[in-house]
Image 1 (cartoon, rainbow over the protein chains, first blue to last red):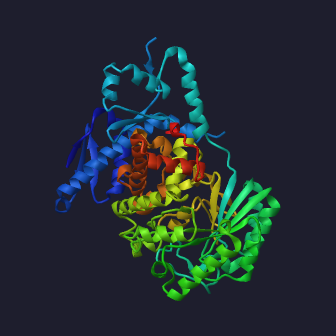
Image 2: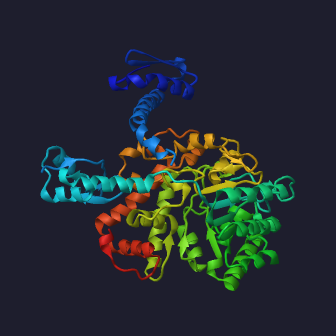
Image 3: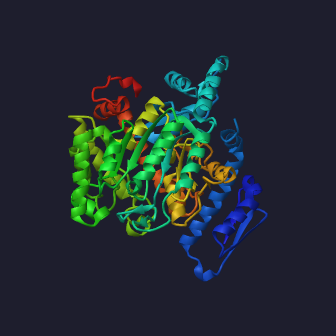
Length: 81
Length: 470
């Protein structure tokens, strides 16, 4: 399976790959340039799973971007008095 | 001077209108073409005024509005120094019942090694001296805390001699009501909370497994109510599949017992309930249907006297009066251990009772230290920084975010992680349902419900009819 990453999200790919490999230890997930590659035993694949995986990949990329964008707010919320 | 867009806002379709909320939860309703008008620079004069009143559009010569909004954000969300005002204590994990949904893997009544001892009391006193506010509320949980009233009495002595004022609630199953417990009820600052899940047969199915024991519970309950008055006793239901198809039973039970409030609380997905009530602890649509039917019944009761659903009333007060919410499970940031914590039978400190449950069942260790070594600040911080919706990737777009909370403990229990898509969680679905209910009534100007909301806000059956609040 291959999933293309929007350019704005490329800088988060490393951390997202770590999270995805933790969540799906049976899969081998990697990326090159602007594409995530997922290798697995083909007998375990079905359309539903592919949809779930696609949702998870894009959600994790989105989370990573929002985390970075909002980090100043988080730091303020938990700053020491 | 042309206005400029200067603060964040969020929106949601409610009935045929567009609800818009600002950073702190001020809100207004607009026509659904508002966004199109805004981005085409074609807002009507009335829309401009409404958006200015929400401090979303601010004229350049009115920068004070921006700073005023920022001050309100600071007041609402700024970090606060730890001062514990509410403690849940588990003097014993032993219990004389084995309820079907027990969440803490309670210990058998005769088991050894599940109670506080003299050393625990000494360490508890040191903890109180270092961490608590002038006023402290203590809730005795279990297990069944009435099995160790000697410890309860010792704890009361410690708290009363180290605080300016205090109050105590013992959460007891009321299977036994001995003289020692009744003597405690003579104290002005001591009361009972118990579990009433509905009729006698429901109590037997959910809790006691014997009608005779259920009968004793109701007899003891009525004895306290008649002899000590309604201020001395409260009750909470837990709703399982045994009650979900008959909301009339639970509502009427509470109404007939003379309560003015009921907290419709679904069985949660923890402890024994994960296996024994798996379906009902996950079926959000069934829960929301049950809840809606219950609200219809509550509306009818309010035609004759005051009766509130505790959680909906809490949200109504939060939205329309900005009252602060003390419920750690439903606020954001959650700020665990900031004003509330749990001390277990083995001296472990937890951020909430649900966190204790998850740890007891070995799903995830959420102990944040213990009485011997103190609070584990590093671990606490690791959890706290994720327990807020202000920067949550899904919540930041939600119109209800300023009123909502977050519950990462429930997420961990149900999904083994808390970075799932929020709108797919039980918590989010329940919250959205409740907020939609409230704002649909406001948008419709449904006077029947607005009158009830006013009653709940003023906690009175004869409130001032100030509809401008909405």
